[in-house]
Length: 140
Ligand SMILES: [Zn+2]
Image (cartoon, rainbow, N blue to C red):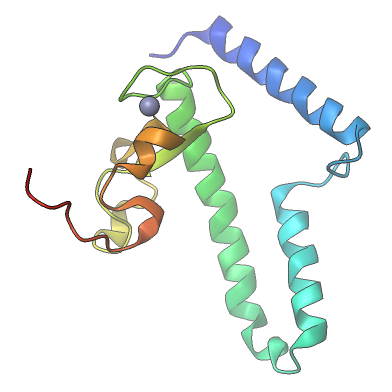
């Protein structure tokens, strides 16, 4: 499996990165993705009088996104934070790609085996990048 000491090292780095961002005022120190989502929601709500109707769905979405982040982290750890396509491991540019698209295989969204660590560059080359239906490249 993944290298335990490497993982700790990376986690420490992420932690340090968060602290330095917080010090620069880029992100509130304790704000998790979830709080940020809620903040966005409350801003959205003030503009949209019908927002309460969608609130349950939104909370469900947020819960799902917490699950998603957890899945993503597990994939990163399994792949030792390295792009599985080009071997890039500089960090900060890694994403998790769904091997089978979320749209066509919604049941596999949180399946570890369906996730692969790719850098941004390699991720964009996948046909399902951004969860969009991209027409296949012209024959070459
Ligand atoms: Zn790559």
